[in-house]
Amino acid sequence: LRDHRKWNDLLALINSLILILPSVYVTYATAWKGDYSCVFRVLAVQLLRSFCGWFTYLPPDPQYLSSNFDFPDFVHCSYKDCFAGNDEGEEESAPFVSFFSGHVATMVVAANHMWLNGWKTSAVICHVLNVFQVVRLLATRGHYSI
Image (cartoon, rainbow, N blue to C red; front, side, top):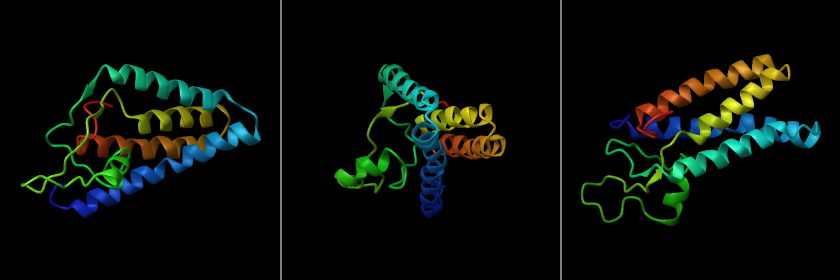
């Protein structure tokens, strides 16, 4: 992926777009069905992840492959030129929470909720997509662990 950055960007974009499925499901379960348990679980996981991750706020791995299509890189790079001031042409990455992936956690919570509410096929699809997401995050050194 380091030699083929466009593939890295494409996979990062797909990784970000994958989150549309659980987001739509959580919105549907909350707004239309009145089931607040899923949104509370997602919010609790993200809050605890942020709190625990604050204690593991580390610089990115030296082999980390960033992409302007991946969160939080697209936020970081939209306010600052990630290639500025670096003679080697390598990106400058902001430190990030390396406790575990919020993308992965959101997918797991939503997929498990889907399974429990009879959306078995959608749940399996989310878990399979999550495996690809985990592999990409580990391959690009997006997190130290998942």
